[in-house]
Length: 391
Image (tube, rainbow, N blue to C red; front, side, top):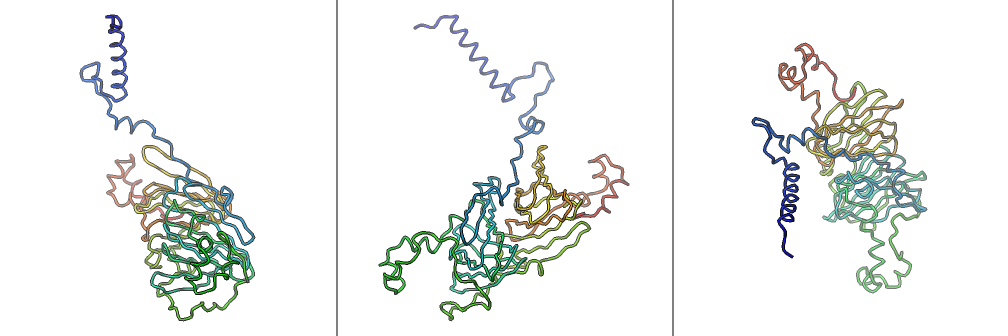
């Protein structure tokens, strides 16, 4: 059907309206008055609020269904449960006396741990064929590089609890490579050829992944390996964080740091133990080289994050919860309770770096800082006297 003149004009008008709408949204229209200015997209972006900061606190103890069995429990926080934490995952694991986290390895992440309660014995094998068996107590940490086979045992007649950290947020403790899972899916004939044992030997083996198993209570001294001739690893997998970490005291608390400098095998992570006393804050600062992942051992507090363009968000957390702060985001921590806020903090870099707001301001000329914040030179000079760290 032929288009009428009126129809053509109507269509043209609608089309023009669409162009005007599009042009308006893209800020392409010519100003109505000579000399008037239009705002660029960048200017609009800077003046209008951006998308709100995502939640950065998660209750790992109560929010995760995890794994539960007679030998223990495991609660994890990966990107599936805690989407903001793309670079670091964590697991809270408990083992009962006589229980063990079976022989396994992780293909995409190194494993770090901090013992919260009880005692743990670990065994690990390295690619060079060397091995190491170590006993851990409360406050000790271990580190196993990606792909190294290992096992964790509750040591003694008391249950143990430890925090596991992994340098990949997409890692899942329930998707690791377990020895029982592999062997249960290989034919007895192949297993017999591989081990020189009769095929009938494998009839009683687990038919699925064991994950956490139970056995005899592990006691000291350290037992001998199946093959006592396998050499011991030259790389220490154990570090006594509470006693040997780099200690720094502040008016409102302290920190104990363990980086790759103090613990050479720990190449992908840095660990920090931090105490913040009631009423104190961990000053405003940021980390230029790493994301930050926190676990609350005890106490309660607020974490406040600055994500640029006026985006600021504060969230409360308490014992058993974790938080995540992206690399370069400004932040501070405030103890809002009546007891010491105790934290374990991980950074996904072997070297520790930070820049505090107070240090930064003091690194500039007095007049420049005064002009920025409309201060008198005397007020600006007093910034140099302010305490930093935790106060």
